[in-house]
Amino acid sequence: MSMLRRFKDIMASNIHALLDKAEDPEKMIDQYLRNLNKDLGKVKAETASVMAEEQRSKRALDECLQDVDKMQKYALKALEAGNEDDARKFLERKATYTAKENELRQAHELAASNATQMRQMHDKLVSDINELESRRSMLKGKAAVAKTQQRMNKLGASVSGANKSISAFDRMEDKINKQLDEARAMAELNKGPTDEIDDLTAKYSSSVNVDDELAALKAQLNSNQE
Image 1 (cartoon, rainbow, N blue to C red):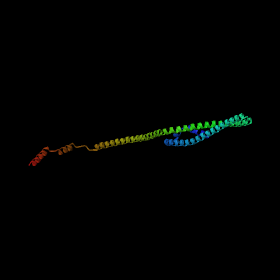
Image 2 (image 1 turned 90 degrees about the vertical axis):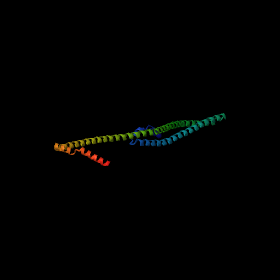
Image 3 (image 1 turned 30 degrees about the vertical axis):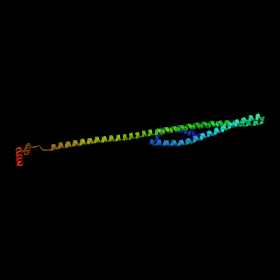
């Protein structure tokens, strides 16, 4: 039976092989389950057809057995009535039914075997689909975690790049500070020699006469008291 061979192949299919080839495992999981449910519909229809054939062959066998038994009874009745020729005719017909019975029995055994195999494959496919349905949420959860980890890995690379930029910025700042220090030192060196007298003059010129300030405060105080 080609249908039997086809669905034996379906039973032997490997979901992991499909997922390994998939660009998006989550979408492939959904697609795989859709395909399985579609195949399940075909398996169910074929299983029903095979089981119906088994039932038909069983009815045909039962009817033949009834005919064999009936001819046997009629032959016995004919003998009891003293009609040997009639009994012979019933027995000849019984022999015909008995030969037919052997053919029908073989056909029924094959049909029953096919029905059993199809029912087993149907039940196995239903069980596999139910299991995969229950695993789908878990697999999608794992896929989400994997995507998050991938994004974190990319962010980690960006942070490393930022750290390099910050280090380069620090180096530039140190370089600028060094240049500024060198420029100040050079400016200090470029100044002419200082005159000690000029410094002393500036010192005493800018000094404050405490006695004069004290006298001014006293005058202001007296003025306020009046």
